[in-house]
Length: 97
Image (cartoon, helix red, strand yellow):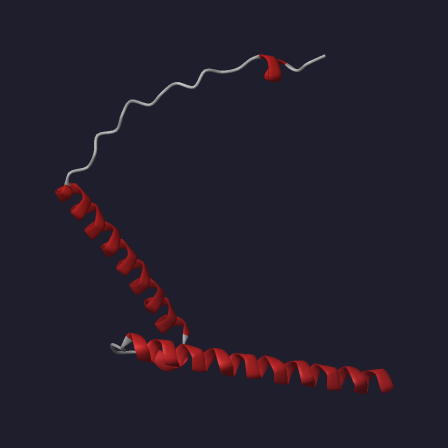
């Protein structure tokens, strides 16, 4: 027995033709999109300034924010590795008792 889906076909309704945007509308859309993109980038940089301890206070260039953020991440990774090694050492000590 065939399912009703295979025997019944829905007719697709055609969308009315869209009006083309004028050059001015295209320009305004582009400007708005670019402003939104820049605002999102700025929000990202602001979040980095909040998170990275060496960036507190004052205006910082985007380049400085990125460099200090990378530095901070490297320090965190180093600390994580040291903690893992210390945990392994302690597990060995506890295992030997």
